[in-house]
Length: 425
Image 1 (spheres, helix red, strand yellow):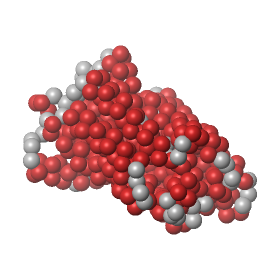
Image 2 (tube, helix red, strand yellow):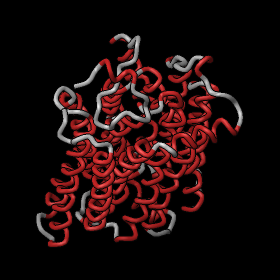
Image 3 (cartoon, helix red, strand yellow):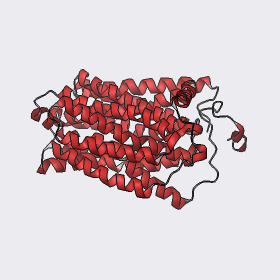
Image 4 (tube, one colour):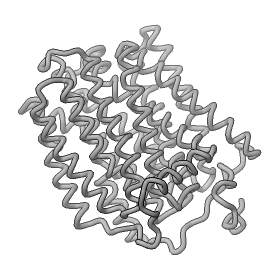
């Protein structure tokens, strides 16, 4: 396994399945723990914004006198906001540093949450949800950029795995929190709670997060440096494939998120609290896989882990389709293979982004922005696709098969083109 010789290899030439150099000097264990805890809390804003209102989707349909497909578009609005916000905030964070965009974005999220509380129609709710996503994008892109400021290669993948453990509490708790709020108030109360959460995270960002990008490493001001940076990223084919794979893996997750409340509550008859518990079990599968991912680093390269995980996701999704079409297994026939798909996604999500970001440490904010925009942009496309296909178990399963197969073919093809055998350790 190559080590010292790799340090002279340029990012563009680096093969996908080669280990990457560790940063020097590396943060201490105590500093790493602090970074993980602070960034984990901040990056949780996005998942909480997406997931807390999921148990309320049927209630919103009734209260605003609209359709399930229309309400599902409010999720799409959030994801579009997250995608566009990262494209703007990522390059900005390379110019002015990480803290200022994070603080401003969190403030936007607070204001948008308060607007959601008083939204008079599903159309306005969709607009305000888009603004929520725009604000939450700051936490998502800045967290990824800070990780790349401080770590590279396997160290970055390890930190991202641990970060997923911390932020993973968000999707586990979010539907339960939303369901609990619905026991005492309407769906509008959920957005009031998100506003309060934003205030708490704003305070945390101001007082607990140090600047990780010193002035001498910042990029030039103006539009053209941003355009040139995006141009260099878009010319890196391996980077684009890794971004594509990460986005498709996230799309499998969003296929479940978009259809889960309708499948589990309307098709299988769970109430809001039961839905929250079942949803949390899926999140636990994803988080558990992301932590076991660190153990696998001692035996396999990140690209091998991703390829194996995508193959497992595809096989499990095919089983889901067969059982759903045959009407076999009931709710367990849907959930058991689903949990295998989510576990496989848990292996892909830390590794593909870490591999992609390692290739462009000189523009970590912009690279993280493009990565995050692709992930949430694909999610914004997938959410209404599930609705169009019927918002049922078949729709979720077929969508997961499509995204898993596409990601596996893309990564396998580019790995073979690098001339590296996928069975190398």
